[in-house]
Image 1 (tube, rainbow, N blue to C red):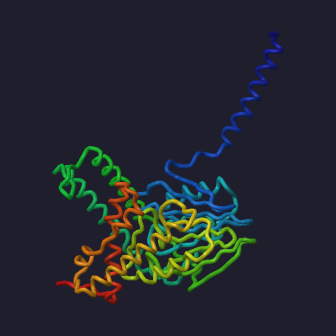
Image 2 (image 1 turned 90 degrees about the vertical axis):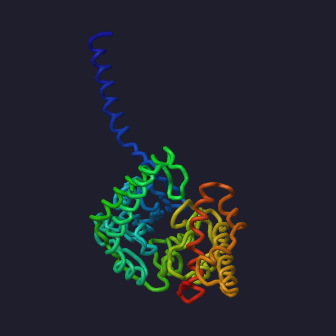
Image 3 (image 1 turned 60 degrees about the vertical axis):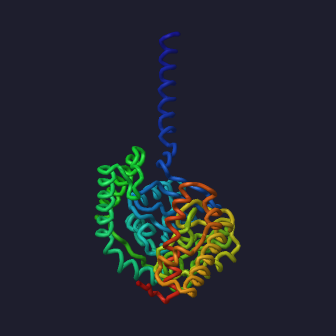
Length: 366
């Protein structure tokens, strides 16, 4: 090869390298470990976020002609920033609306990220949800710190005794998993001590409908795991975003004593034309089977609680002992040991809600 040809080859190779490097750099970064993106309809994406130390609440992103709407904003701002980075891979359109389904922290603490990034963003919630937020959120730093102390103390005791709280052996695998969980919760608590809580600034009662281009958004206030929760229905896409009115694969409930209005809300929503359902936690659902299963569960609990009280049961413990959910357990768990454990741990709380509702909120003691 001549000197001139060698120089030409070298120059060509260098040019190829210069071209190749930006091309590689332009490739979208992979999603963070544990982040799952599911396209539910054209421009409608569910993001299931990585474990955050609290609860992996779902976020749904709707990309419209000129803007973006986000449904629920996570419990950790650092998690919200991960979601925002994923949004940026899809579009450079601004987030115009953030919808908070209810007042539990895992559904709105990330509001601050969108407010900082998109000045003028409108954050939507029901009036009652906003009031709950303002009254309850100030207590959370202390509540979370107390929760961490209890977790840390339980871990220390398990290591010391070599046993779980129920007396079973505390295995090496359990120790590793528990230590990891406690450390993740530690970082969650640290972040919560400095978070700026940004409250909704566009409030409604009962129903709110708006459009972004041709896309219609129908919001309604429903009873569920929290009172006055917002549910979003996209009628053209037939996608229903339920917040914690529905949680999969095992339904839980933390409200005080409102289960019959919850059943009524679920039945009304089940009457909609639906192709996809997004629960507050868990995978997207492509039919109504699980929704109807939760309705069956709630109705069975209510009927059995009423029967137990009418037969003379007094305290909630007595009622919990006689409510039998074995047939429904199998439909939820399909024999999976972890789901069995979750079902057994969750049902007493739902039974207590039905018990208190049946007694106008009162709980008797012997």
